[in-house]
Image 1 (tube, helix red, strand yellow):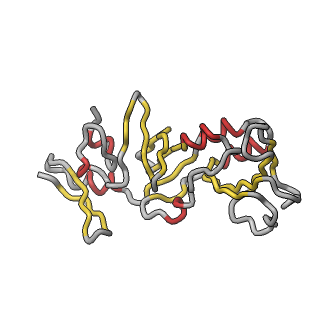
Image 2: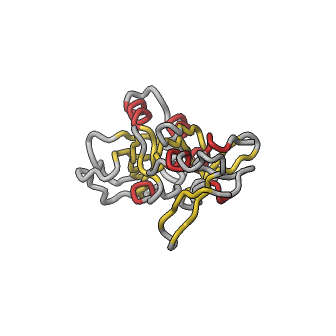
Image 3: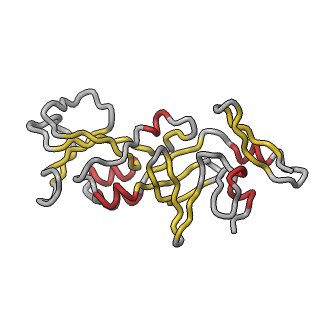
Length: 204
């Protein structure tokens, strides 16, 4: 059973839904913790409450690899009202089977003969110096900046980079806000007002 104060602002398992942020529900099965964000299920790798950091990885991306899109859309990270990219976050773009080189300094990886594509090139997302005409497909995925550097140095592979995942931060320090409301010993809960603003309140 989870200790209540240690898990603000999350809920799930033995914790009532009202005692956590509605978008921060943890699902625990067979010693694996998952969270669904924007319709995508992620495995939770780490929770650092002191820095509001959530380490996650997409099981679908890990299982499929980078050569078998479609992959989950992770553009939600840049527009999320709850999360913001964490430190060391890297959004990268994958270009598939381009008919001509799209940039001289891109990483390029071959795919297996049974994959949907024969090769994939990698660039930092929103790189305006890339000519993507003639590419069969384009996909954005998220990894850590350190994983990207290891790929560049050939000291890591894609499977390891995807398993390492990436980090996001929840925007508001709900833990501090709720902690200040529990001095009387009563529990703290979350309430949605006007379908937009989420408030932390003291439960009886």
